[in-house]
Image (cartoon, rainbow over all chains, first blue to last red; front, side, top):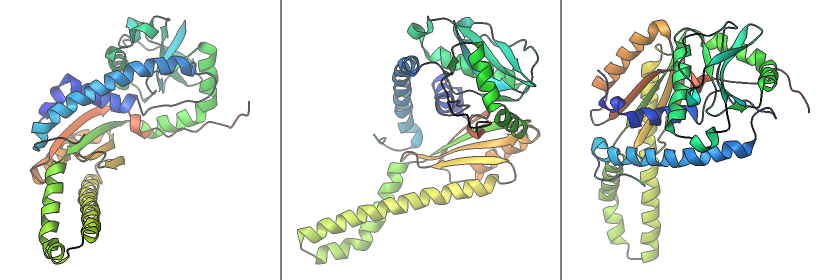
Length: 71
Length: 248
């Protein structure tokens, strides 16, 4: 019943990223930590995100049944 | 010492048996009126240490709380400078938090991604179109006109491609009607990613929903691949507004 893809830790991380980076409670105001700190963190996350995307793309080819993947 | 927030919860009691937080920190709750917020202390080390584990921890804490409570998960890396800042935020959003907690109580989020062979489908459409327009291209020798024709063919193909995608996503949407309380659909985020959908499902109906998904998989076109995930905290279904607009 379970999709094989779900077992992969990378895909799980990708699914989590999809949610926690864009969605959820976003509060505004001067109370949240300074933007500079968050930016610093996001640089790290962007690197992570792009490496996960690469993995997904590599995996995507055989499993999408197509010879090549879009760029 | 700063405070990292995981999510707003529908309880003002102490929380126990939670997962460890970011940097292995103890997760506790700060109550505000009849609700609370799950947090952990965060020291300055985090700036050097950010890694995928932070994201997994954020999610793990939210999922563990979700087992017993209703939670509005925060966006990753929501950090406050101190407890006062949190309490002030809680008072500002209290009404909206309450409204969301009530609406989402007893419900779970599920995710569905559907992947198709976008390239193969584009190729098929292009071949079909080429057969039809072959005669026109042959009978017209002007390079400029042929160029325009080619552009037009490409445009037509893209439109047909999108139409096929949207036809599929509306079929899925109709299919799940009755199983889910709310849905969020995103069609053709990329050529291969036919559908990205989130569903808000009543806890009591989650087995029906999963069975419906199995039927969709069995009866749908067999060249599609599916990624079904959940249950998740309701990341995609939080609609926030400030309790009252306060001018600084």
